[in-house]
Length: 394
Image (cartoon, rainbow, N blue to C red; front, side, top):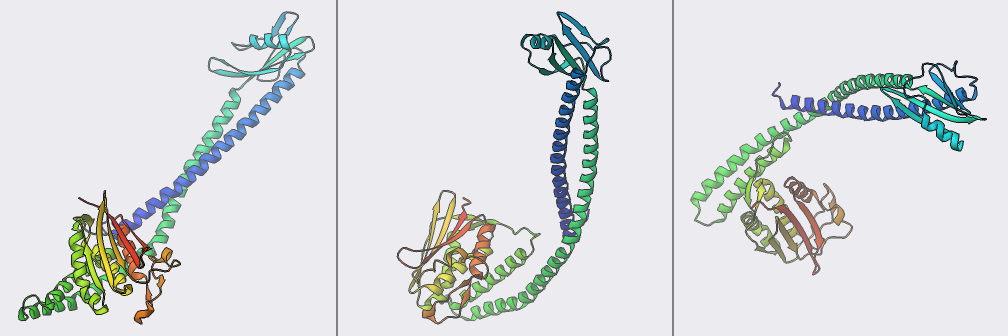
């Protein structure tokens, strides 16, 4: 078996579409077969009843009935049947009932492995009964079922092969495009990693020359975080790979994110506050950090004076609320706020350029990959509340 992931992807897709096509044909053939059998059976019953009625109406005596039919006539207490009538015929119960009330009766009689349709009518002063052997009707129905099964099997085979062939033709160009995209991301990541490594090295050298607890420590931490984000993006760009997940201390992550956002908040005159409870989630730290940073950035950009970050826990879920005291979110924008490239009006009081909701859409995708959700609402006291809800791991 080939170890090439792209080849495995094509083969899996071919097999899946082939099976789906075969399943669709199977359902169609089954429904068609059932409909055909029911129609044939109904037609046969009508023909059998008509044949029995005709045999009774034209019967002069019981010695020369139509092929496959046996006759019985009861008149004046005397019963006469076609010579060599099968065992179980005539049907005495029907003869007696029709002789008593004169009502026509049609019943199916089983004798051994044979089945007969029996019709009993009153003709003048006589009761006439005609019995038809159903063996030939059953044989005709069995042949029809065999033909349908054979046609269905051939149809399934053709449908499966056709589905696999169509899938290969459809998926191969897409796989090639994805491979090109992955190569581009890998090349871009390699090119970005080199200057990022140099930046990290120079920041560490600068920290050795600076006094303890300086802003350079934050710069070094930011370069490490940027490298982790780059690794996470490279993993996320390849859908074939599973991003490694591990327990993440969400309270500690929020503390780090709020500390990193302090300079940007201070520059805008926004005060940040953090309230947490012990909580861990199972996921990948880089993605969760990007989500929290995007929520913080959105809150800082739209706040007037304060942004509150609150971590709460309820049952098996944890929730991060980022609450700002800004003008809130227009009601028309709430349904599409987390849609990729959905436009969001800029805060005109800060003379900003118009922004787009790409960051919030990424938060939605990260939340979905962790089995969580992200929502937005306006606070009753003013401002907006963006909530990230995730499954708790401890």
